Image (cartoon, rainbow, N blue to C red; front, side, top):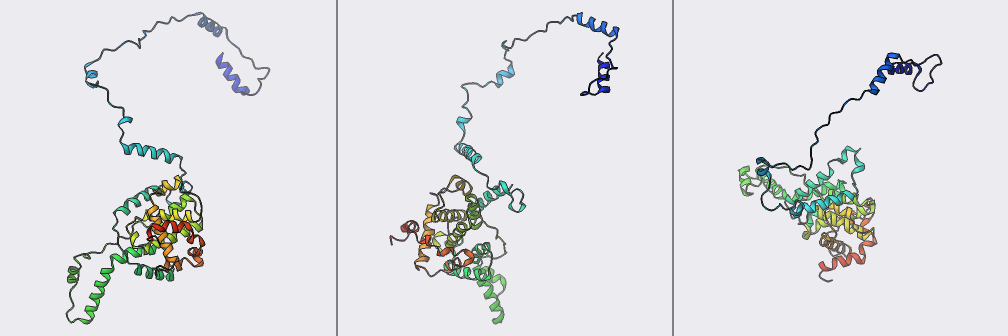
Amino acid sequence: ALLTLLMTERETGVNSKPKSHVTIRVTARAAQVAKKAQNTKVPVQPRETTNINKQLKPTASMEMLAPKGPSPIPEDASMKEENICQAFSDALLYKIEDIDDKDWNNPQLCSDYVKDIYQYLRQLEILQFINPHHPILVDWLVQIHSKLRLLQETLYVCIPVSQRKLQLVWITALLLASKYEEMFSPNIEGFVYITDNAYTKLKFELGGPLPLHFLRQASKARKADVEQHTLAKYLMELTLIDYDMMHYHPSKAATAASCLSQKILGQGKWNLKQQCYTGYTQNEVLEVMQHVAKNVLKVNENLTKFIAIKNKYASNKFLKISMIPQLNSKAIKDLAFPLMGGS
């Protein structure tokens, strides 16, 4: 009967009406088998049920695995402080906007690895050697950098390199001069000995973290406009001529410049997203902001002769950002007051 029904459905279609001459025939034999199967009762043997409440007798292996003495301390109660902080940080990150999420289609921005890159740069800036530089040299380099229209990164790379290699330049100049004037010029080994073997081999270690790298991330987290980003670059570049700021890490100097530019232009407060992506709170960079405000006050009131950076950012290319009236505001003077000797 079932076979005949299936054949009928195939001929007529599932959704179509059956034709009038097609009938479903059930043979007598099939009817008898179906009736016999209906009247026949299959005896079902009862299965043994297991009492789930029955207690198992402990074996020797179970006794060995069973803890002796009082129960151990719960895992969450014994977590270390750094693990708790990390868990709390992860919970905060879950609610913070991912500023690199929309850059997945741009391979140059490396959105999948950008967070790991910045984490590596922050580790690298701790290990890099701090090279003190003279403001006179920096002021001169800024002028040459502006005339040649070089990239901003070039300036930040040039300054520490010029300090590390300054002795090498002098020694090399002395070697060339001796070869020109001296009858018996000293050999190179003698010059190497004079420099305490500091230049036995040349290492091209120019890939250190730059403040400009961290500033771009801070501006991206803030969704800063061109004016605020340019002002932050000006404030950050003023740190190059301040001998008291050479020991600050690039990330901290960049964060202070970004925070201060936001404060000067009155574009809101330092929020949680900026704190997350820069790694600093506003209180942590307050001291750096005071030094930056001091530098702004010095160039505005002609208290320093190193004004190449101010003149550079007074051009139309940089929106004349160093000439805006907000740089003479009370907020700048209040920040710089503790470092200006009360003047």
